[in-house]
Length: 462
Ligand code: GAP
Image (cartoon, rainbow, N blue to C red; front, top):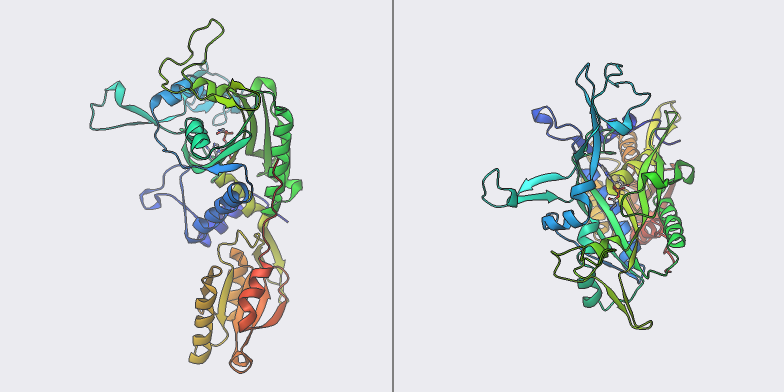
């Protein structure tokens, strides 16, 4: 049973230290969120799982970390300055301002009127100014990147030559992106500051691009499965021609059931796009348009690739799987949410997170906190596990309460140290999902827990 709605997760997230509303002491800042002690661990675990899966376990992908602020010309030639727009309309009656594509039945969502201004474009790149310059100096204008992808394209040649790569190969990057969203909302689903995990997979112009899109869709479905997402809560959306971005010939979105309570429950989790050779071509000094004119007179580099075998120079095509960290975290939390009733008829929340993603892997709980020998043994076990996995010590309540607290934050194992432990050098390991308990020797504990923290499946390379 996944969470019945996003609000259930908002409340759990705040109560248990995953996500807090940002700037709360000043009344908040619309749709900005801060990740708490458990949230930061969960985000890191998602990002590490992704990085391990693509960069370490495959042999055809490199990683980079480019700047957030790039030369403004990057955004001119990528097309973002001209086209990264939302279309805005104003309600003449209540003066509310909305995204034109989100209006249902032509009715104002605030007052119900049907009296609109003309739609006009609003560029959603967030602006800043570089250096100690006058407010109105146009040369100081810069943007916070709206996607991590462009930092990859402009480094294509650097990575390819430094790492002596041949096609096909990919470059992965994870990091913050910014968009001045007109209608942010739904918790961490749509915010102005968010994190992306993007990978640009460079292939020959004669590769089977559409098949590669399908291949990456399958890979990501498997990966999301390994994070614990139920396939029934994922849906593939073939983006129609008229909705494709200017650079794309085909895009498939993987949607997640973020709104199970609604008639239309799906929202985008990630997209997989065939971006053609648009990006490498547009940033290249030698690429010509149909009339034989250079399309980019500002570029000092040519991002073409020489294929030794075919003795041909060309601009590689790109297949791009682009995912959001925050949307993955929200989907993972919603899918992991479950409730269980104990012997006393009390309903408990259990967050059935994949053990790899759980912020805390093991909680060491002394059964008697007034017994120094038991406390000492429990603390020593915590210290001995820490180099192997994330463990915490907790003695701030009765055992029932401590178990419930760990279940609610998704800790897969609770380890209880009791009077018997002093005699037999063994502890009780309790499973989060089944509540079953087994007795394990302290000397075997680290190995026992590691075996049960199942590894992610290793994907095949193309
Ligand atoms: N480079 C292609 C690109 O950026 P996108 O579909 O605009 O494509 C990719 O973004 C992913 O980034 C989305 O599927 C979503 O997971 C995440 N994302 C985009 N805008 C977001 C926002 N305002 N808040 C949270 N996540 C967002």
